[in-house]
Length: 220
Image (cartoon, rainbow, N blue to C red; front, side):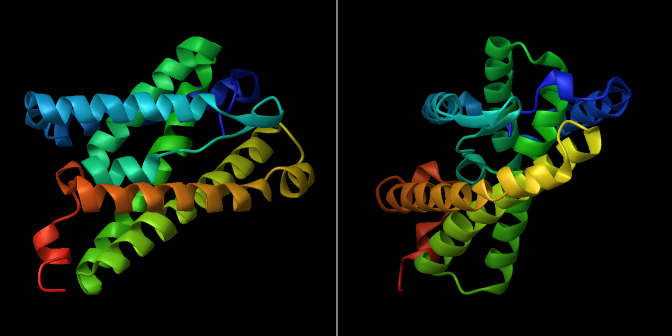
């Protein structure tokens, strides 16, 4: 994950920064900012961001720019919706970037590690919500477990393709020594997200904006 500035061709930045700007414009226009006026919501959101910062700090790597850590993107999406999840991960990435100094890599990391997994997680949720029965097991397994596993796998594929096209590492090297680790990361992310969402919907369903216990629990 965590791309580094040295691996990004300078001409690419002319496209990446405007795309990041459009993403922030979308956050500004679409996010329901009045949610943060409630102190409880603000506390939960801030605590979730702090936890994700901690998760991103616990990482392993094989070479510069080839790091692995849990994302938390699907959990944030299910808890706060796509735009606040994107806002949260943009803050997390900004904090991480301040510490590692990879400022030029910020837009690429934002698009690959935040926009992509959040967009995919939200798309899965919408399909499940519209086309499948409202059942707790379906919600947790498909949105929490399957959704997070697919999101991390998509980030792995995107990171691999980005590094290969940028000429950071040969494609064969990435396919043999980098991408396979995402299968393990996908399982870890799926297990952690599934367990977290299960606990939240049972004990704190009000913290999960995409979950309504009247639909998923009552009468089931």
